[in-house]
Image 1 (tube, rainbow, N blue to C red):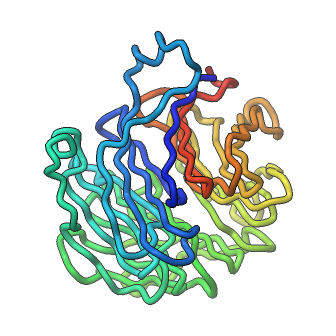
Image 2 (image 1 turned 120 degrees about the vertical axis):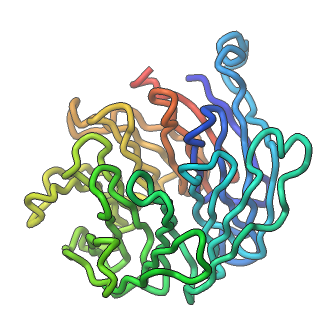
Amino acid sequence: MQTQTHTTPDRHGYSLRFSPFEANHMLLATSQLYGLAGGGSLFLLAQSSTADAKIGVQSQQQLTELCRLEWSDGLFDVAWCPYAADIAATASGDGSLQIWSGLDVESAVTEQTPKEPLICLQEHKNEIYSLDWGEKWNYHTLLSASWDCTLKLWDCNRQNSITTFVGHNDLIYCAKYSPLIANLFASVSTDGHLNLWNSLDFPGKPLMSIEAHASEALSCDWSHFDRNVLLTGGSDGLIRGWDLRKMRTHIFELYSGEFAVRRLACSPHSATVLASANYDFTTRIWDLGRGESPQEINAQHTEFVCGLDWNPQRAHELADCGWDSLVNVYTPQCLA
C-alpha cells in the first residue's frame, strides 16, 4: 500500500479535509497538548503528483507543508468553503470559529497567506468540536456544534449567528448537513442521542430525537447515494445505520471493537463503502455489500485516530490523522 505521510511535532491531529477544488491539497487542524491546553495550528498540505507517486521507488512519501497558520487555542475541526478555493473555516477550543483566506499554492509560495483570519465568530461558551460548511442549498452557512450543548447556524457574511439550536442534554461532538435533502442536518451527543433538525426552523428545536447509542454518540455521517440513510458511531464501539423512513430502530449494526468510534466517513465513490476512525489506533474500511466485518484494518497510528476524509476527486483515496501527530494518505488495499 502506497502511503504519503506528514508529521506535525508538538501538534496533535484532530481533523482533516481534502480540498473540493484541488485533488492534491488538504487542510489539517491540530492542537497542542492533545487539545487540553495551548494553541492550535492549521496546515495546508500537498501530495506528490500521481505520476511522481507511481514512479517512486519507496512505498512511503512525504506530504509537502505549504503553509501553517496559528491560533491561540486548540483547533478541533476544519471545513473548506464550497465556493471559494482558498477559503476555509476552523473550530476552536475557545468557542470561536475562524474564517481564513489565502489557502492556495500561489499565496503560500509567495508567503502572501494572511496570518490572521478574515473573520472570528464568537458566541459559544465552550469548545466547538464540529463544523460543517453547507453545500448546494446551504452554501453560505456554517453549522457549529459545541460542548455548551448547543448548535449554531451562521451566515459567513455576518458577525452574529442566525439561529441557536437547543435539544441535547450533553456535549455535542458532531453535526452534519444532509448532502441530498435541503436544510436537513443531524447531530450526535454524549447524551447518546441522534437529533434531526431543519435549518430553517428558527425556534431551534429538533424535528426528531432518538437514542442512537446506550453510551456516548461521537460521530455521524450521511450516505452520498441514499437520501434516507445516515450512520452514527459511539463509545460502545458500534456503528449503526438509520433510515429516515423508519427511525424506531437501526437498519444495521457494525462492531468496530471495544473502543470508541471517533469519526465516520461515507465514501463519495461507492454506496456501500465507509471508513471509521477509532480510539484503538486503527482506521477500518467497511463494505456493506461484502458483509458486516471490516474489509481492512489499518494500524498505522500509535495514538487515537481522530480525523478521516475521502478525497472527493480521486476514487477511494483516504486520509486519516491522529494524536500521534501523523497524517496518512492512501488507497485501502481492499479498494485498490
